Length: 452
Length: 58
Image (tube, rainbow over the protein chains, first blue to last red):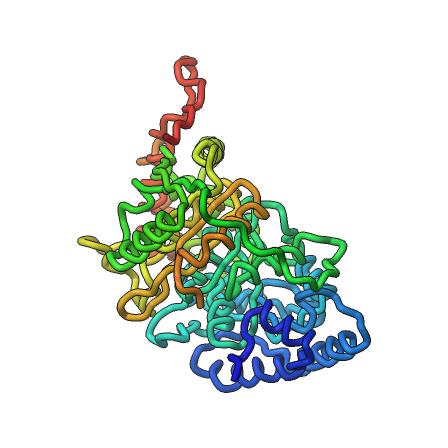
């Protein structure tokens, strides 16, 4: 008996072969939510009735020959930071109590036009300001593989929903790594497209010059399907399978070491090195390249991100401070103390990093580095042991992703081999343009790891 | 304003606002600001550092 279709690609094929209906796929996801959400807490709002209605419409349209493309009839979850007409956008905060969105976010409207079925709104770190999902007005999200661990964040509910079979894909946001971190922690593919490529209108902002919208999926091909829909304001009508991936042989990849591999959990390092070795065996050239000012990334990031976040939150920090979780409130307050002189220095530092990443990419199809320095961290832990030192969870989880929010380069997390404990590990690829990045990632995906 | 004076003022203000838990975060921010101020991309009025560092990734 063939395996149950789980990826967008598999479900799309099965729908068109009349082997399955969108309603049945949606019912399966809703059943998974009913069975597992009480323990995982991935969803804040389940849109069961609406989803079944959308699914039945998709089935009718497909039967009548109206094919909206590969997302038609596919169950998708949405981080509860995206506006969906008529539903609350909580951002996992009591500050948003009573909110009801008047219209879809632009990205949601594009998914809707493509026939996607919205199964629900997923839990997140409050206002997307954190990497563990522990600070949420709706309680923490638990990792589907180990309830004592965080699935990563801030799009943790999104990642957990896909890993647990509650959706075929999810929409997340990424301001410092919030798509790539949970994707790495949950063994998924997480795409942060280039800055500005996908509209953020209708998405609760965190840091307006670093916010990105993108998908968390089970394969690079699935991420490419969602990306094609998100970037097009004219809709993607083709349901034709995508072209075969490029040949990995002959590809040139810049391998980032130094800062990027200096502080890695030994099992993450081992998994990443094994992936590099498989790439070499497949005929990929790996040359070491450097980002000379990489160790300034966190200082630049915090000055830009928190200053921008403070602007959005200043009013409610004054009027409703107790409606924030304490950790998020404190980090937002921190941003209000940043002085202009240092903010401008951070902007100059950003220019330097953009030039350095561009320079590192010259002559290479992509850059390669780990996506997260440690496997999924334990809930409640403030620090995690990495080699011989105790590192703050927030710093170590953001360490390898936030550079590409500062520079805006497209980046994708792709699964590597798991740790001995069965925890996922992610590799990260970075390129100049998103379509090129997806081509490279599709070609390298089989060599990086076993997939999901 | 020097980082030292800024940090003293910031901690004092946070204490006045009964946000004493902000102290370690402000200290971390002070370390980040110091790092930015020492970075080699900063120009100064002497004109000796006006050119930003050129990336050499190899």
